[in-house]
Length: 241
Image (cartoon, rainbow, N blue to C red; front, side):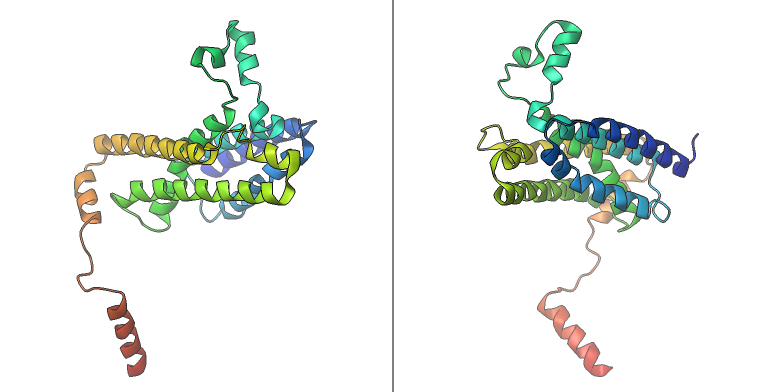
C-alpha cells in the first residue's frame, strides 16, 4: 500500500496537472480567478499541515475528487458546464430532458458533493484534533458542513455585491432561482448526512464498542452549571492566587 505522504504527493501532482489543463482558456478568466481563490487557500493549508497532520488516504481521495469537480466548474463557470452535451454525445439522449430539468444542475451536483465528499475529512479532523467521540463524531461534521456551506453563500453574495455585472452573476450561478442559496445549502447538508450515515453503518458493523462510546459521549461529564456560576468560580480562583 502506498505510504500516506507519497499518496498525498501523487494526488497533488495529478490535481496540479488537471488544474493547469483547465486553467488554459477558461470560459471566463475573471470568474475562473475568483473561483480559485479558496482553492489556493485550501491547497496552501493542506501543504502546510500534511507533515504534522497527515490525513488518511480516504480523506485525501475525497478532497481530491471534490477539488477536481470544482476545477471543472471553474473552467466553464458552474452554470455552463456542458455535462448534458457530453451525455448526449455518449448516449444520444439528453440527461436534462430525461430528468425534466430546465437549468444547468452542475452547481447543485457539486454542492451535494461538497457534503458527501468533505464530511468525512472533517470528521477525521474532529476525531484526531478535538477528540470528538460517539454522537459528536457524526453530528459535528454535519453541522460544520452546514455552517461552511452557509458561509460560502455569504461569500458569493458579497462577491456579487462587490463585482456586480456579469462577473457577479457568473460567480453566484443562481440562474434566476431566488431560492438558489437555500437549495445549495440543503444539498450540502444532505450529502454530509449521507456520508455520516455510511460511516456510522460501517462503524456499527466493525467497531465493537460503538454503542458504549455513543452512550458515553452523551453522558453529562460536569454536573455543576456553567455560565454565571463558572464566572464566579474563575473570579474566586483568581482572587485566591
